[in-house]
Structure formats: C-alpha cells, structure tokens
Image (cartoon, rainbow, N blue to C red):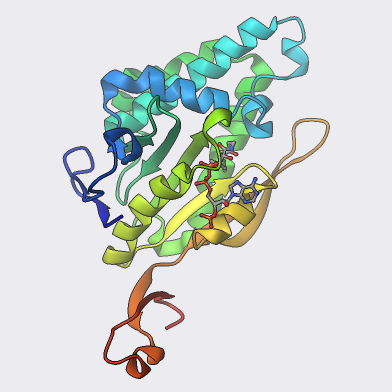
Length: 264
Ligand SMILES: CC(C)(COP(=O)(O)OP(=O)(O)OC[C@H]1O[C@@H](n2cnc3c(N)ncnc32)[C@H](O)[C@@H]1OP(=O)(O)O)[C@@H](O)C(=O)NCCC(=O)NCCS
C-alpha cells in the first residue's frame, strides 16, 4: 500500500489514498457529519466495557438506571463527541461497516467553542449526566486531560495531532484497521515534523501504541470512584526517513527507514 495523506489545513477536503487494488471499504476515508451515528455506534461498541467510558455512567447515583438507559447515555455521549469532531476535527473510518473509527484533533483545532458545543449536542450532557457524573466529566476529567496535555506537550500543545478516540468493533479486531487509521495521520504528522498525542484508557493498549511509534510519557488517574482509574499518556515524536548505512552495501539500492527526528 502506498501513501495516505490527510491535510492538516483542510481535513475535510483532502484525503489522498493511493491504495490501488484494495476495495474501497479497506481504504481509509473521512466520515462526514451525515454519518455521525454510524461512527458513534462503532465507538460505543468498542468502548462498551471501557473503564473511563463507564466512569461517567456507573456512579452511586445511577444504580437504579436500567442497562438500556445507561447504554443510551453511553451512545449519546459518543454521538455528541463524534459530531463535534466531524465539525471541527477529523473523523476517519475503515472497513465495510464503520468497523474501526478514529477521532483526531489536528493542529490548531479544538471543540471548545460555544457554537460547536451547541451544534454537537454536548451541552445536553449538563442535563443527562447525574450530578456525580457531571462532577466526574466536567470538573475532573476534562480539566485533567486539558492540563496534562498542556504539561506534556508544552508549546507544541496546539501544534500536534491529538488522537482523541480510536475503536475497532470486537468482530473486526486484529485485521490491521487501527494501524491503518493511525498510520494515515502519523505519516502526515511526520511529513510536517509534528508530534501525535493520545491518552490510553486500557492496560493492553500501550503495547499496541508502542508498535505504532508512541512512547509513554506520564500516568494520570481519575479518582472519584472506589478504585482509581489509570490512563497512560503517550506521544509519538515525528519520524523522518533516513538513508540506512546498509544501503551503501546493497548495490546502490536505497533503503529508507523511519527514524525519530528528535533522536536523529
Ligand atoms: C485498541 C484497538 C483500537 C486495536 O484495534 P485493531 O484494529 O484490532 O488493531 P490492529 O489490528 O490494527 O493492530 C495494531 C497493532 O497492535 C497489535 N495488537 C492488536 N491487538 C493487540 C493485543 N490485544 N495485544 C497485543 N498487540 C495487539 C497488532 O498485532 C498490530 O501490530 P502489528 O501491525 O505490528 O502486527 C481495539 O482493540 C479496540 O477497539 N479496543 C477497545 C477500545 C480501546 O481501548 N481503544 C483505545 C483507547 S485508548
């Protein structure tokens, strides 16, 4: 497969995929705002058991809620978040039925403005979450993520790619979908010399993200539930192709390998 590039300046307009020979469903494509429900459904399924996703829904105040009511709230949250990213960020998918979906915030973009909060429906969470859920989401989670990203990225906070969510439906895992969605943007980040940032909410995931060039930088904790919930902060520094020294020994064939630009 050849290069897939997403433009940072016009994320909705430009996706260059030269994955010739592959069916369309196996190529990375941008999700439009009209498809937000399908994309959110994928993430809802992928994060159904995720500790952080459950943190806002499973509180002592929601013990009387039925599983169906909790599921609806879980889906609602993801629909608002996906819609906001369709408006202001970048939402990509791959697979025949939205099998894997990634939400990115490209450099210089955010979903904090009132218009986006209004249009996406995010404002409804003030009424839909229980009082403890609201404290967890608005007073603990969002400020913790914001402050940690600023602390870790420093003056690159607004000049990096932020992988906000990625999820693959359980039936579609292990097919390389998450790798394709992540590679799609990290190639662009590399070309621009920019870093990528993510928070990981599952102990299995850092091993996956390390394979994709991310490194752990910090651990953070959500601490309003009985047991603290740990999240790993990971950063992928931009890599640049360099000519391997071994290429000189191979009859003039140039071998390119990705090397961390900062380490080079
Ligand atoms: C994490 C997740 C997105 C991976 O999706 P996926 O489409 O199955 O991943 P891929 O098939 O593209 O695999 C990517 C790489 O990780 C490796 N990998 C995937 N699952 C793994 C696992 N459970 N343990 C170890 N390595 C794993 C693959 O081998 C692959 O590496 P390779 O290309 O070098 O062989 C998926 O498991 C998921 O949705 N999990 C639940 C939601 C979640 O936790 N999302 C991330 C939030 S931070």
